[in-house]
Image (cartoon, rainbow, N blue to C red; front, side):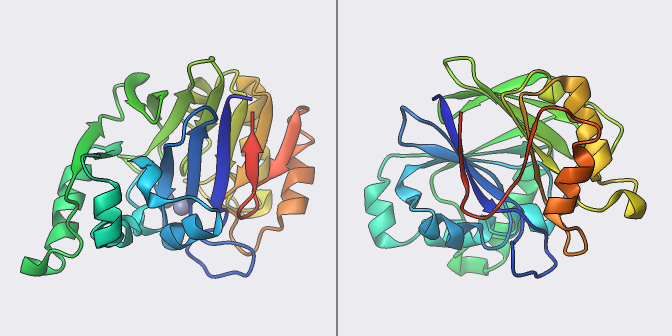
Length: 261
Ligand SMILES: [Zn+2]
Ligand SMILES: [Zn+2]
Protein backbone atom coordinates (compact mmCIF):
# COMPACT_ATOMS: atom_id res chain seq x y z
CA UNK A 1 0.00 0.00 0.00
CA UNK A 2 1.64 3.21 -1.16
CA UNK A 3 -0.89 5.76 -2.33
CA UNK A 4 -4.59 6.47 -2.28
CA UNK A 5 -6.61 8.16 -5.00
CA UNK A 6 -10.11 9.42 -4.22
CA UNK A 7 -12.39 10.19 -7.15
CA UNK A 8 -14.21 13.47 -6.57
CA UNK A 9 -15.58 13.91 -10.08
CA UNK A 10 -15.77 11.27 -12.82
CA UNK A 11 -17.94 13.25 -15.23
CA UNK A 12 -17.76 16.51 -17.16
CA UNK A 13 -19.38 19.94 -17.11
CA UNK A 14 -22.62 18.56 -18.58
CA UNK A 15 -24.92 17.76 -15.63
CA UNK A 16 -25.66 14.09 -14.97
CA UNK A 17 -26.71 12.10 -11.93
CA UNK A 18 -23.65 9.88 -11.83
CA UNK A 19 -20.91 12.47 -11.66
CA UNK A 20 -19.54 15.97 -11.86
CA UNK A 21 -16.46 17.65 -13.34
CA UNK A 22 -12.87 16.50 -12.92
CA UNK A 23 -11.31 16.31 -9.45
CA UNK A 24 -9.14 13.68 -7.70
CA UNK A 25 -7.46 13.70 -4.29
CA UNK A 26 -4.08 11.93 -4.16
CA UNK A 27 -2.27 11.04 -0.96
CA UNK A 28 0.72 8.92 -0.02
CA UNK A 29 -0.71 6.56 2.58
CA UNK A 30 1.87 7.30 5.25
CA UNK A 31 1.10 11.04 5.02
CA UNK A 32 -1.86 13.13 6.01
CA UNK A 33 -1.46 15.85 3.41
CA UNK A 34 -2.83 15.35 -0.08
CA UNK A 35 -2.90 17.06 -3.44
CA UNK A 36 -5.80 17.70 -5.78
CA UNK A 37 -5.49 16.70 -9.41
CA UNK A 38 -7.73 19.17 -11.18
CA UNK A 39 -10.34 21.17 -9.43
CA UNK A 40 -13.54 21.34 -11.48
CA UNK A 41 -16.79 22.77 -10.10
CA UNK A 42 -17.99 20.70 -7.14
CA UNK A 43 -14.53 19.49 -6.10
CA UNK A 44 -14.44 21.53 -2.88
CA UNK A 45 -17.90 20.31 -1.90
CA UNK A 46 -16.89 16.71 -2.61
CA UNK A 47 -13.91 16.97 -0.23
CA UNK A 48 -16.37 17.11 2.65
CA UNK A 49 -18.21 14.03 1.39
CA UNK A 50 -14.88 12.21 1.06
CA UNK A 51 -13.84 13.14 4.62
CA UNK A 52 -10.89 15.22 3.45
CA UNK A 53 -10.11 18.47 5.26
CA UNK A 54 -8.76 21.60 3.62
CA UNK A 55 -6.32 21.77 6.54
CA UNK A 56 -4.37 18.95 4.89
CA UNK A 57 -4.43 20.24 1.32
CA UNK A 58 -0.83 20.61 0.15
CA UNK A 59 -1.15 21.32 -3.57
CA UNK A 60 -3.49 21.69 -6.53
CA UNK A 61 -2.12 20.25 -9.76
CA UNK A 62 -3.94 21.33 -12.93
CA UNK A 63 -3.92 19.60 -16.30
CA UNK A 64 -5.31 22.55 -18.27
CA UNK A 65 -7.56 25.56 -17.89
CA UNK A 66 -10.94 24.40 -19.20
CA UNK A 67 -13.56 25.33 -16.59
CA UNK A 68 -14.50 21.70 -15.89
CA UNK A 69 -10.93 21.20 -14.60
CA UNK A 70 -10.19 24.41 -12.70
CA UNK A 71 -13.24 26.48 -11.84
CA UNK A 72 -13.25 25.50 -8.15
CA UNK A 73 -9.92 27.28 -7.67
CA UNK A 74 -12.02 30.32 -6.74
CA UNK A 75 -14.24 28.33 -4.37
CA UNK A 76 -11.04 27.06 -2.80
CA UNK A 77 -9.48 30.52 -2.45
CA UNK A 78 -12.64 31.76 -0.74
CA UNK A 79 -12.92 28.69 1.52
CA UNK A 80 -9.31 29.12 2.68
CA UNK A 81 -10.18 32.62 3.95
CA UNK A 82 -12.46 31.06 6.54
CA UNK A 83 -11.06 32.16 9.94
CA UNK A 84 -10.95 28.64 11.41
CA UNK A 85 -9.17 27.23 8.37
CA UNK A 86 -6.79 30.18 8.38
CA UNK A 87 -5.84 29.42 11.98
CA UNK A 88 -5.52 25.69 11.36
CA UNK A 89 -3.31 26.26 8.32
CA UNK A 90 -1.19 28.99 9.91
CA UNK A 91 2.25 29.00 8.29
CA UNK A 92 1.27 26.49 5.60
CA UNK A 93 1.59 27.42 1.97
CA UNK A 94 -0.60 25.98 -0.75
CA UNK A 95 1.23 25.04 -3.95
CA UNK A 96 -0.51 25.57 -7.26
CA UNK A 97 1.01 23.70 -10.19
CA UNK A 98 -0.10 23.82 -13.79
CA UNK A 99 0.84 24.80 -17.32
CA UNK A 100 2.23 28.17 -18.33
CA UNK A 101 -0.56 30.72 -17.90
CA UNK A 102 -1.48 29.57 -14.40
CA UNK A 103 -0.08 32.70 -12.77
CA UNK A 104 -2.14 34.94 -15.01
CA UNK A 105 -5.25 32.83 -14.39
CA UNK A 106 -4.77 33.08 -10.61
CA UNK A 107 -4.19 36.85 -10.80
CA UNK A 108 -7.28 37.38 -12.94
CA UNK A 109 -9.29 35.21 -10.57
CA UNK A 110 -8.10 37.31 -7.64
CA UNK A 111 -9.32 40.43 -9.42
CA UNK A 112 -12.83 39.00 -9.88
CA UNK A 113 -14.05 40.52 -6.61
CA UNK A 114 -11.98 43.70 -6.80
CA UNK A 115 -10.70 45.17 -3.55
CA UNK A 116 -12.58 42.69 -1.42
CA UNK A 117 -10.36 39.97 -2.86
CA UNK A 118 -12.56 37.06 -1.86
CA UNK A 119 -10.98 34.92 -4.57
CA UNK A 120 -7.38 35.91 -3.77
CA UNK A 121 -5.14 33.13 -2.42
CA UNK A 122 -3.23 34.33 0.63
CA UNK A 123 -0.49 31.76 1.26
CA UNK A 124 0.34 30.38 -2.13
CA UNK A 125 3.25 29.50 -4.39
CA UNK A 126 2.71 29.09 -8.12
CA UNK A 127 4.70 26.61 -10.15
CA UNK A 128 4.18 26.86 -13.90
CA UNK A 129 5.36 24.06 -16.15
CA UNK A 130 6.17 24.34 -19.83
CA UNK A 131 4.32 21.59 -21.75
CA UNK A 132 7.28 21.32 -24.14
CA UNK A 133 9.68 20.42 -21.31
CA UNK A 134 8.65 16.77 -21.28
CA UNK A 135 9.40 14.81 -18.15
CA UNK A 136 10.12 18.03 -16.23
CA UNK A 137 10.07 17.51 -12.47
CA UNK A 138 8.33 19.06 -9.48
CA UNK A 139 7.29 17.89 -6.02
CA UNK A 140 4.01 17.95 -4.09
CA UNK A 141 2.52 16.08 -1.12
CA UNK A 142 5.57 13.80 -0.94
CA UNK A 143 5.34 12.74 -4.60
CA UNK A 144 7.76 13.43 -7.42
CA UNK A 145 5.74 14.90 -10.29
CA UNK A 146 6.49 14.88 -14.00
CA UNK A 147 4.49 16.22 -16.92
CA UNK A 148 4.11 15.73 -20.68
CA UNK A 149 1.98 17.58 -23.29
CA UNK A 150 -1.31 15.98 -24.39
CA UNK A 151 -2.45 17.94 -27.49
CA UNK A 152 -5.89 18.60 -26.01
CA UNK A 153 -5.12 22.33 -25.95
CA UNK A 154 -1.75 24.02 -26.58
CA UNK A 155 -1.19 24.22 -22.79
CA UNK A 156 -2.65 20.89 -21.67
CA UNK A 157 -0.41 18.45 -19.82
CA UNK A 158 -0.75 14.99 -18.31
CA UNK A 159 0.88 14.19 -14.96
CA UNK A 160 2.80 11.29 -13.48
CA UNK A 161 3.37 10.99 -9.73
CA UNK A 162 5.88 8.68 -8.06
CA UNK A 163 5.82 8.13 -4.32
CA UNK A 164 8.91 7.34 -2.20
CA UNK A 165 8.30 3.58 -2.53
CA UNK A 166 8.39 3.91 -6.34
CA UNK A 167 4.65 3.37 -6.88
CA UNK A 168 3.41 5.38 -9.85
CA UNK A 169 0.17 7.01 -10.78
CA UNK A 170 -0.53 8.68 -14.14
CA UNK A 171 -3.36 11.05 -15.04
CA UNK A 172 -4.27 11.98 -18.60
CA UNK A 173 -6.10 15.22 -17.87
CA UNK A 174 -7.94 15.78 -21.14
CA UNK A 175 -6.13 14.36 -24.10
CA UNK A 176 -6.25 13.19 -27.67
CA UNK A 177 -5.10 10.02 -29.37
CA UNK A 178 -1.82 11.68 -30.40
CA UNK A 179 0.79 13.01 -28.00
CA UNK A 180 2.99 11.90 -25.17
CA UNK A 181 0.49 10.11 -22.96
CA UNK A 182 2.22 6.75 -23.47
CA UNK A 183 5.48 8.17 -22.07
CA UNK A 184 3.61 9.61 -19.10
CA UNK A 185 1.78 6.36 -18.32
CA UNK A 186 4.67 3.95 -19.00
CA UNK A 187 4.41 1.02 -16.55
CA UNK A 188 2.15 2.98 -14.15
CA UNK A 189 0.53 1.11 -11.27
CA UNK A 190 -2.63 3.12 -11.87
CA UNK A 191 -3.48 5.05 -15.03
CA UNK A 192 -6.46 7.39 -14.66
CA UNK A 193 -7.48 8.17 -18.22
CA UNK A 194 -10.20 10.29 -19.70
CA UNK A 195 -12.73 8.45 -21.85
CA UNK A 196 -15.13 11.11 -23.05
CA UNK A 197 -17.07 9.65 -25.96
CA UNK A 198 -17.90 6.30 -27.56
CA UNK A 199 -15.71 5.10 -30.44
CA UNK A 200 -18.36 6.03 -33.02
CA UNK A 201 -18.62 9.57 -31.61
CA UNK A 202 -14.87 10.25 -31.44
CA UNK A 203 -13.58 13.84 -31.57
CA UNK A 204 -10.05 14.98 -32.25
CA UNK A 205 -9.20 16.29 -28.79
CA UNK A 206 -10.60 13.58 -26.51
CA UNK A 207 -10.23 9.84 -26.02
CA UNK A 208 -12.65 6.98 -26.52
CA UNK A 209 -12.70 3.50 -24.90
CA UNK A 210 -10.53 2.10 -27.70
CA UNK A 211 -8.03 4.98 -27.91
CA UNK A 212 -7.65 5.05 -24.11
CA UNK A 213 -7.15 1.26 -24.07
CA UNK A 214 -4.58 1.48 -26.87
CA UNK A 215 -2.51 3.93 -24.83
CA UNK A 216 -2.83 1.74 -21.71
CA UNK A 217 -1.70 -1.32 -23.70
CA UNK A 218 1.25 0.45 -25.30
CA UNK A 219 2.33 1.91 -21.96
CA UNK A 220 1.87 -1.49 -20.27
CA UNK A 221 0.10 -0.01 -17.27
CA UNK A 222 -0.97 -2.32 -14.44
CA UNK A 223 -4.50 -0.95 -14.16
CA UNK A 224 -6.58 1.39 -16.31
CA UNK A 225 -9.19 3.60 -14.64
CA UNK A 226 -11.56 5.19 -17.17
CA UNK A 227 -13.07 8.55 -16.23
CA UNK A 228 -14.42 11.90 -17.56
CA UNK A 229 -17.52 10.28 -19.05
CA UNK A 230 -19.96 12.47 -20.99
CA UNK A 231 -23.61 11.53 -20.37
CA UNK A 232 -23.91 9.76 -23.74
CA UNK A 233 -21.25 7.20 -22.79
CA UNK A 234 -22.21 4.36 -20.48
CA UNK A 235 -19.18 3.51 -18.28
CA UNK A 236 -19.92 -0.24 -18.23
CA UNK A 237 -20.11 -0.36 -22.03
CA UNK A 238 -16.91 1.72 -22.25
CA UNK A 239 -15.03 -0.78 -20.05
CA UNK A 240 -16.26 -3.66 -22.18
CA UNK A 241 -15.06 -2.03 -25.39
CA UNK A 242 -11.71 -1.06 -23.81
CA UNK A 243 -11.25 -4.70 -22.77
CA UNK A 244 -10.96 -5.74 -26.41
CA UNK A 245 -7.74 -3.72 -26.72
CA UNK A 246 -6.24 -3.70 -23.21
CA UNK A 247 -5.91 -7.08 -21.52
CA UNK A 248 -5.06 -5.76 -18.02
CA UNK A 249 -7.41 -4.70 -15.25
CA UNK A 250 -9.95 -1.99 -16.18
CA UNK A 251 -12.19 -0.02 -13.86
CA UNK A 252 -14.60 2.86 -14.29
CA UNK A 253 -14.14 5.77 -11.90
CA UNK A 254 -17.09 6.38 -9.58
CA UNK A 255 -17.57 9.37 -7.33
CA UNK A 256 -16.09 8.96 -3.84
CA UNK A 257 -14.41 5.72 -4.85
CA UNK A 258 -11.03 5.18 -3.16
CA UNK A 259 -8.34 3.34 -5.05
CA UNK A 260 -5.39 2.19 -2.98
CA UNK A 261 -2.11 0.84 -4.40
ZN1 LIG B 1 -10.58 20.08 -21.55
ZN1 LIG C 1 -12.60 18.05 -19.46
